[in-house]
Image (cartoon, rainbow, N blue to C red; front, side, top):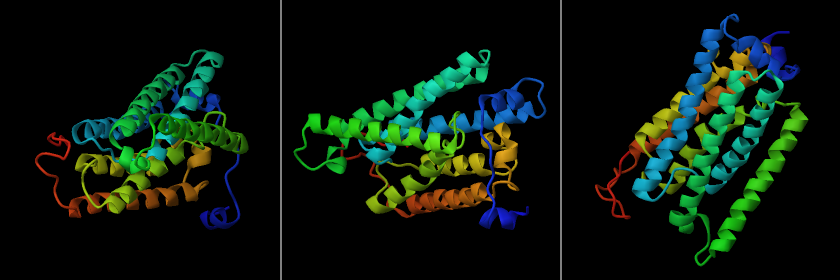
Length: 266
């Protein structure tokens, strides 16, 4: 079946199991070095898309992401901790599963930190004036619970025991949403050039057809021949990431001292 048929009438089938990780990422397996490099790149840029916002929030008292994006990632990464701990426990303590579980725990920590800062610094953006702390925390808890249940339902529907099919949507959101938020706000505060360059890198690392971590783990599912929609989505993500960078460059420069009284660091 050709790519055209895949686009209109055929879709890849099969599950991404923990055994796929072991088969393609064990030392000595065919292409294992490139596979580990692709995963390392995705993890590094995945950490940067939260490290930079934390720096921005601390120095400018506003971050680049909407509240719901933090709660979405908090739910997804909390789920990931248990997914990869379970795989590590049941598949001969394969090292990568433990590393991924630790990485997910680090992401959850950063996301909870950003949620706390959203309550502290972004009350006027996320809630009506006069909203109580109790109500703000309730809103966050409800969002996290709804996303957690919804994402587990999605995994069930996709037969996605390892989150590998679902997880790509985290890259889709991070490359598209911040630029739209930036455009709506109309100012650079809470955003940065280096962050937008990182979004471009995330799109390139996640969707290039030669070396991305989804392809590395399940090539028969994520190859361009079997899954062209994956790479079409990648083009869209790259477009919006570049667009976000262009929008940022066209906005007026930040003040030397922000409204919060601090000097911007990014």
